[in-house]
Length: 197
Image (cartoon, rainbow, N blue to C red; front, side):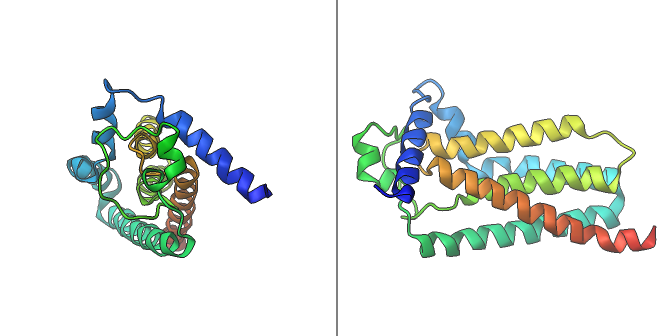
């Protein structure tokens, strides 16, 4: 077995272990976390808060950075999924035969799962909004918001494993991509404001 094959098998075993931590009593919790549309009202409230704290210019800079982040990581995920061609756990015979939990049975999803767009989008959202607040208003303390938004984003990432939609590796790479793109774009968004200081 090659080194790459060993990593893939380790990822499968780790994913199976995490997936089996779930049970019927908390399946609904993971399903709600995994549902993108449920969180739209929360996103709106967070941006009302951001515009209130930062004013319209800096608030708009954060909003535009978020839109660009989501666009890049989401479309990047779609391209890479096709290019890599790694099947989702629910389409992987080894995973299914070794006890992968599918709480709501087999559900239609794109065949490929590397990397997770849920992970990249939520970690990107958490990073842009938290660092946007922190960097554009350094005199204020947004630590509590940071804890809340990153814990939420982490739970969304885990929910994708619990639903059988992604491997742990898919989610980990997605989270790293989301963080990296968000951080880089937000750094660029700060430049016009730095020039005026």
